[in-house]
Image (cartoon, rainbow over the protein chains, first blue to last red):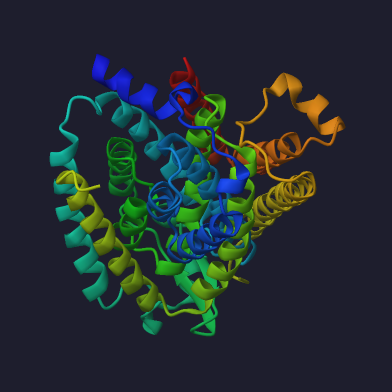
Length: 310
Length: 117
């Protein structure tokens, strides 16, 4: 690791560099709670962490130091994904086995990404990632059908019964779709490719400082063929595990400020409860298109970062 | 829902229950802590107290200590899910996923140690 790398980590983690002392009177707790509510709603509806929204809001609108913003954001992401995963799993939308399996690839990817972060020019990488996001967003918005959710002919409980004895379908599952009013059975294809892509996703999230959901959701939906709702639910389950490591590290380095995080957690939990209701009632294709729009906005942010605008 | 097999259903129930329980306990502690902040009035925002002072702070009804306990409960909830899954797979003698859970716990511990040293 180079000296530049250590310097960046110091800037991010050291509370010594903090800044002016912030008092509670200076921070509007209602704005913090509102930020949490929007982030929780967005994160749980789309299966992402919501850090893309929280960090700019805390730094640009509330003028908080970046290390407090990142520490607070990670705790809020854990709160969003735990709330969403609890509800989605209760309603049988989460593919827990798939989530656990993909996590074994994503987390090592994140470790490798953290080590090679200094070897690559982050601005070029951000621009390249922005281009990839535009392509993925276009695919998600324009593709008519992925998996069984939008194609009633694929619904066949008998297929699932066979799947349990067929080793190639050991991750197959089913869920009740509130919007369609019926049980939807789906298979999970391209598992090795999904694991490889998960490794890359973990690496990219370390390299670019983005949440895993932005990469995991398209992989599970477009590559592995999961319908959008189990994709969102499984992504929430995975983010809970991934973000916890980052949050614990920031906690250890003293970047989590309890009285600052408290209103965020309350807002996030309320927002995530609303978001899970929305996601379960919405059409799968609508969720995919909204996610495509969200990816496009993230791509623009990546281009801005590449141009050093933000 | 009916087509999910019994093992999957049991796993879902346990994971879901522990997620919801973790969030509920954490939220309750955070709300109590924030209420104490409101009663005490505005002061400087400080980082989480060290673990050695946490119990003392909680016994003194210190708002920051109570919120910190809520945050720690929240942060340990996802790790608890992996342990819940590990126990479930172990009871069901599902060696493949038992291996997946053990690998995942090792990877999480490794990444945490690597980041902290």
